[in-house]
Image (cartoon, rainbow, N blue to C red; front, top):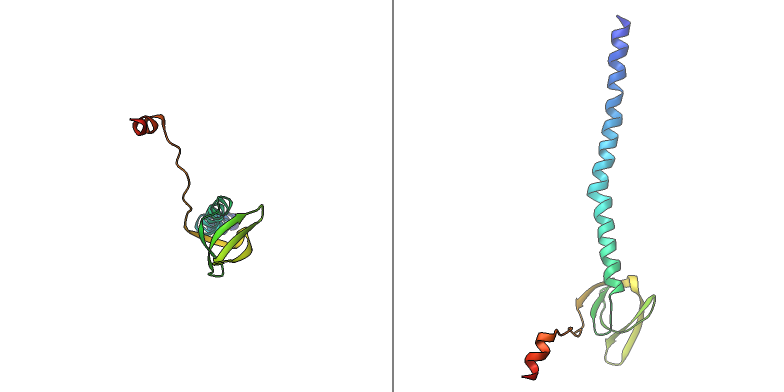
Length: 113
């Protein structure tokens, strides 16, 4: 009689551990993984900055990138006014700079004709 009760209690002890593991799994996929993805995208955007990009800082300041160094960016916030910001302080690129497009041989031939 006592053995049956002990066997039932032992099987029920596994359920809380399973629920905790399930909770951690849900937290990982709902919170941690999306945050890591956003961080990777932000780092990629900050490393791709180039002169001419119009950007917004995390403080809400709009400016145009005039120079890029290893860990900082030089922004022109008004005509003749330049300020230096750390790369992580750039929140987003509003307007990317015009970048030269590589022309193919077909485009070059059609221009010559």
